[in-house]
Image 1 (cartoon, rainbow, N blue to C red):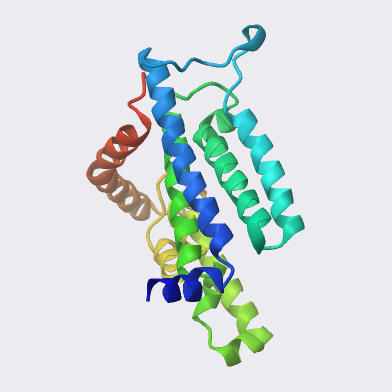
Image 2: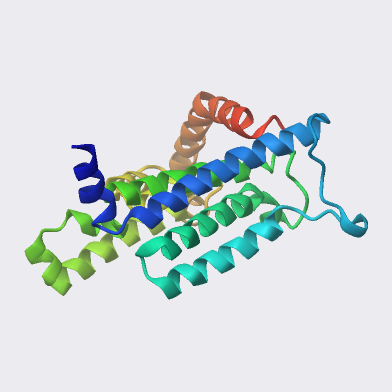
Length: 246
């Protein structure tokens, strides 16, 4: 029974490399955070890599693994041991790179600062997207079309265009997480697109400038939303990635 499910849902659709990449990504991220927290606390045998006095961040080997694994996956297709090994390399490299996403974004070592928590958020979003792809979701909601509709290019193009529009509107309204998840789950993008924009978003600056009531509602909703969720979100990121220094 279990073997049949594995073949039907993972091996036969060619999802095994994606599963291996996701597992390698999660394991690498968890191990990296454990090691960096031990280094921060001065415990264990681990130390920063500083050849010649220069601190080599783990984003560097991460980029190398991503490049090697990515090109190997493209060259080898999606079957066989080589493809699986390349997927593991790519997943591990991605885990190392995204663990220091904030450093790349700010071009500064913000790993243990409040800005550094962006790395944890990006990692969690990436995990969610990869899990959705593994579960069978296709970008832009195309997985919801029937076989006949899939052969109709007009329907596919329309579905992709509409969902992409919703995702872009959500992004323009300052709802980046909903926009990203909405690429795979159409109703998430639609929900983000129809709701009020965040007060500091490009949408609010453009369309609420002459609408004081809309601006006031936007600020009020953002205030209540942040009061309700921001502290919980920060506690989760601190629990996963470690509490920032400042």
